[in-house]
Image (cartoon, rainbow, N blue to C red):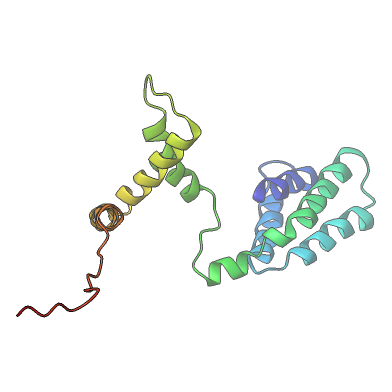
Length: 160
């Protein structure tokens, strides 16, 4: 999310400057507060008011266009309020742990169905729910293979 802001900050103030850092910091906090539209408007105004041309204008307007196109997915204030992660690092780490470490071992080949089944089983195992899952799986198999039937007599026979 910040790459475009850094590019704009560097285009406007130069790489490694305090002004670029402050430019990015202020806009990043606005985006985190859910003010993406205001950031887009502000970036466009910078180009207009400073009469930017060429590469600088292209970079700043590119950032504005990126945030405009993606603002529906940038509801960071809502995500944070719900306790959801907003950085991709935790997701990438989970993918590596859940999928890559198991699926890309030497010599392994997977069909789509086999890979999907393995990922599901690995997710259950890594979540700590494997014993509960396995007990339920066995119970369901038992029910499927040996259904419980209710025996009811068709007629009552009286012996004399």
